[in-house]
Image (cartoon, rainbow, N blue to C red; front, side, top):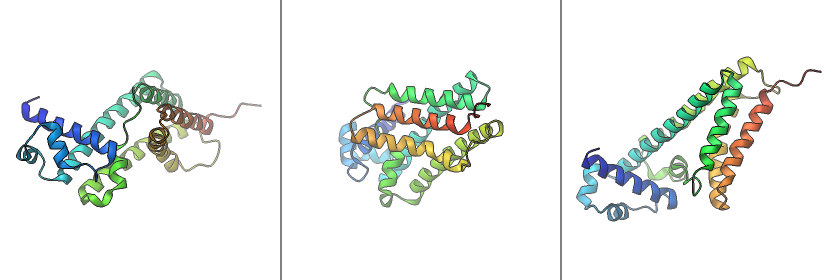
Length: 206
């Protein structure tokens, strides 16, 4: 990584930490510049304004999350050819990854942007929506594969179930931070896993 790339990455790291801690509106370019040890011209060489910074922060955050989720669910598929067992394994792995974060999950950048969406231009808002829709579609594809082998025991909208994992994760992040209990995120993912298992596991034969 060249010096320019390293500086850009440093700016993004500082800005993301500040936004997750106190929100985008309360994070000033001046404090990011001071923390990074830059001049204003040095900052604006990399990002022309706050929306440009937000776009790159979001792209970086989404790419990092995509790599993490892709690796976890790839590992689940490697460990079982059965679509239900593969998904259950992946959710267990996800819970373990969240449990291993030393100070709990730092927060969701997409949620932080969503809470203050009027501060951002259309491109930033579209990026957040695209990321959420992309993972909803990914989870729906997984659930379709499960349902083809294990029909749900109760009538259920698979789109709603696919969206539920993001709702569970983001909601648990908020609750764990509010109540200062990092383990809540792990427990909520495991509870979602139990729900999936109950929905798709065939009833015992009489």
